[in-house]
Image (cartoon, rainbow, N blue to C red; front, side, top):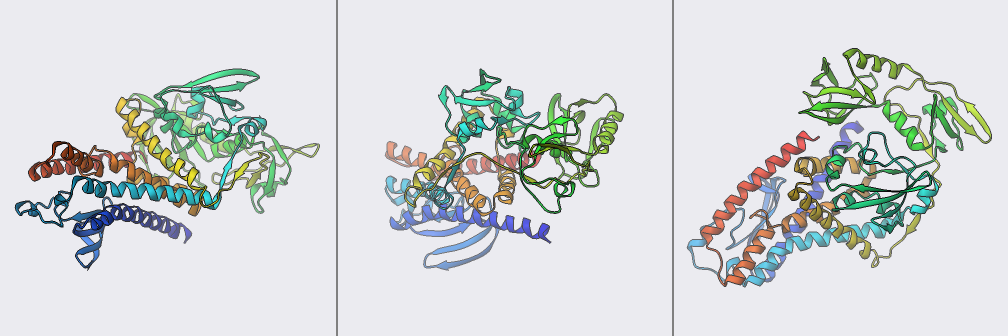
Length: 525
């Protein structure tokens, strides 16, 4: 029952969140329009085409909820907008119309939506800092406990990072907190250089400007650059789990799995996950890419092969970045020469039982071997000895980190667009639409709950403000503002005919861009 109810609640939470963002944005247009004496004919959340869900009229304005969650709008009398209504053009301007007001008032009306979304984003981020504070992991503590953990086959491993590296500087400046070096926004910079200590020797690793493409190819498998290394000491054992059944106890330190030495909890987690997720290298359109597939409790991988060709994906929930038509080259680190190699790997990988060697006080113990079935976990939790700096904010001081966090979203989006237009980032890999955004939202809320819900809304509010301010599409606020500034400079507005032509072109461009992004989202799921 939970499997049915949880996705419904998540979807409704996302939909209500979108309603809030769009309502606040349109309120930013509505309020200054009324203050300046303009007549507002409609106020709609979501597009009321091909039909509306409900509406009501209060005074001169029709308020309603549309059916398409792609746009919301406020229709102001005497304004050329996405409604394409030009009936007013044949009549003389009226004092309550948009076109009759001074250019500076119209600019304020058009900027109001962006301003309100920015205000909402800053407010939500600030309240999250006020409610939860901020936990920061000092880099000295991370390095004391062993440095970073770099997953096998990850983008950062290919870049030259290794488990156990201790990062001491970023672009020549000393690092204070782990969050400074584990921020994906670093990949948006033109140049990023890490200074590390490896085996007592100092080394520098440069991140190429095109590395963002490599990193996004590994999403959502690796959502961060790297992890901090966590010692393999057990803090608690969940009753009823495999760990409890074989005799693991609080305080035990895991030394080995079978004959493999385990130096950290990260390696233990990776070992278990590898028995639930197969790492595949496939050939696609002449390029070799990594793909992943989960293995369910019935030892099904989610796809079928004909020779080495992936001919059918019968369970899309299990696979990630795997597509029909791919040619299978490797599974984990094993190069496949003939189809029987894959079959043998499958048999051998799941035929072995698992045996743990542990340190308990001063005794080294070998625990009974157990059969690990895909989907099962040890259900043990690490003892995290890292000393965290916990910063608590008052109501007013929370607006300092809240504002910083909010506008960092705008900065990151600007850098991302720059990389896309310069050719350093592939738009197919780095542009996200509603499908991808909802996918990220649902995964975030599943792990982070209500806090993650509000954090995602704050991020989306800032992105909505940023995108609306761009003058790239005539139907967006940024283009309207540019037209009004041009009118201010020229001393006269563009003709209604020209404005309608530009708006028509803009709407067609919007539809084409929306279709491209939706198609791209679905293909990259």
